[in-house]
Length: 239
Image (cartoon, rainbow, N blue to C red; front, top):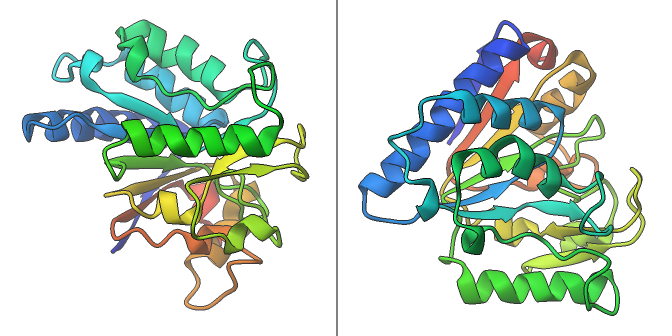
């Protein structure tokens, strides 16, 4: 099922996603489970995290949420380029999560031979400490149609027997990344695409078109049963 939600502007989108995010976590906890969420980076996601932190989210026990990442830049742990730095500052440090439930992707200054070994280590962590599927995956969308660090034409698009992979030639700097694969992302109970701005409009239209190539528009490779596109009007303008 694909649901497309449209909002007049970015602030409306941010507010709606923030409230829905808190609601989803509360629902999962009400079922007696620990929510497992894969987070994303990006400017609209950062705004959403700040909005979540500003809400009354007392319905959520933040110490009982597992946080993962869909992708990460393979740079030192203290680099401002890392997605987890912003999420920590804007949300996780604010709401008081359990640090043991925050599963950051490896950094380049940790004890891994290279980005590929780092990705393999993250895959093992998901197997050992994950719940088998994510309750929610948040994804941004690039103007080229990429999601996580799964880029058009790259060989990672064709790998279905790994959880995480190393990327050495990202078209966006820095070149080295760790990313979850389609097979890992698609085991989610729900995937939310968070997209704002007219610069993404063509990619949104290609991703939602009746036909198209995953190698041209990697977002088409997300086939989880429950998919929601959260769009502001500029991002939805080509639909």
